[in-house]
Amino acid sequence: MPDQDDFLLAPAALCVTRERLIARCNAAFGELFGYDTTELVGQSISGLYPSPQEFERTGARGYPRMRRDGRYEDERLMRRHDGELIWCRVRGHAADATDPARHAVWCFEALGPVQAPAARLSPREREVVTQLAHGLTSKQIARELGLSPRTVEMHRARLLRKLGVRSTTQLLAHLA
Image 1: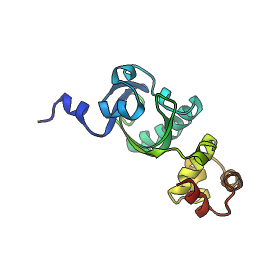
Image 2: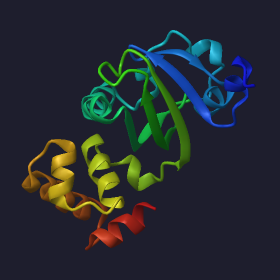
Image 3: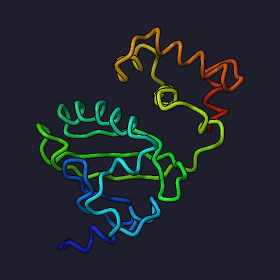
């Protein structure tokens, strides 16, 4: 029979949030972000995001989905204690889908350090690139991010120019 210590010993980086504050986290979570777990408990999870704007935008995008499905998953940049940015796959499950921020369990998986070209991208450009990497069309990305398809196309064109590539395939290969 599992007990409370199993959560702490899990090899996956896990945290429990209540009203977007870290209520509990395991050693793997602390290690991933470069903190002692006691430093994180009671803190806003916003401190692990690259910026307050990305924290707000992720919540605005994720919580409606959690209200619908009770779950949310994405890939995003997160910030370690030393300031290093890392790509993470994040999965969340709400205890109550009608109020997902009230109590949720999150699993973070490091996908690797951020390469120099990706560090130059704006938060919105990173969101568009993440959706492109999942194979979404501009229309699907627009729906996902609450933008117009034309705006997504403008971001895509800017990304190609910024990174000096000629196609989405080259763009994704350049950032991989």
